[in-house]
Image (cartoon, rainbow, N blue to C red; front, side, top):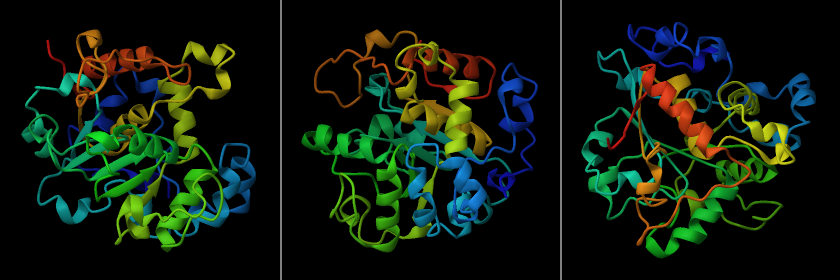
Length: 310
């Protein structure tokens, strides 16, 4: 069941038909599951995964993700494709390069639009578009975004499909609460009402969760950082935006990336919605410069189209 997460098999010029011939060929594994769902709740999987953060919450929570919408990233592609064989995805980061870009209409013209973290849309539609079909986050980044960007109009994720990045027990617990319309039972979000974040009509069909194997595969094969040889090894992980962009690379046929870091990043503020210039910050848990290099290589290889100013 891990190979059915791909979108159309019939796109002649899709990423998967080209990636094998590219410099990324040796890194790419075709059958790695991008998402986890009820079918992964086996004793054997649990034994294997319980070494990883949050995985001991896995059995109790994943059983609610039991429909095809939970294991397919592009779950409505069959009904949507309308003679088009290739799925086009826009993956939108929050980088300052988007400010004044006027890319909104182009972004909204894609079949699917992926966003992450503090994706402030109101007032920025001309540059970043207004549609969202997939929103990637971890519970930690969602809470931080609501705290940090509440003042500029970010009150939570747009009404859409929610793709959890399992970083911690918190992610499994919030996901379970959201799917069952109950309060979070324990942890930092204990007693919180998930409809506050995901709206009153959130249902299990709108929820997805990245597979820990997929995140580890990204870290080891696509984003293998020198940080893994340092004392920060245990906290290093792909950024939320990187996980989202590489998930699109593994599920869409064509990918355009906007608002990701480019070599001239110091010209732009950290985020497109910053009121005044803020320098991009670098932290030990991510390797943003290395991620930037990977985006350049993917763009050069023709596997993604990366928005750059020059």
